[in-house]
Image (cartoon, rainbow, N blue to C red; front, side, top):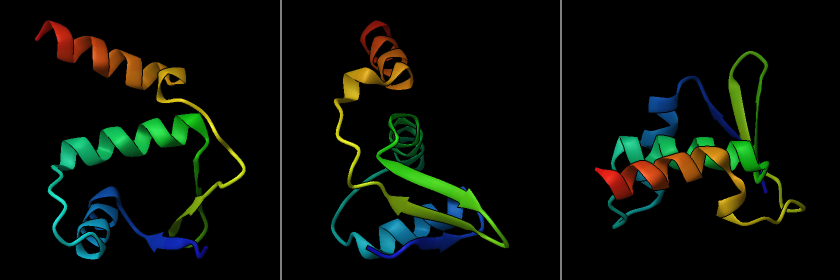
Length: 79
């Protein structure tokens, strides 16, 4: 798998939408997923001259292991 290069979250969102034709996702949903996966370590992000995002295929886990995901899930239930 190749690292994905981007300069901002909005650029990464637009790249993702372009490569995911037919998938409807809002920017807020995208950011929630991104931060959940970063927290879990299933994707890695690093900064050189640009940002790069890579899939960490060796990291397997459940969404419930993310405190960020659990907070969002809790908020979705009370709102």
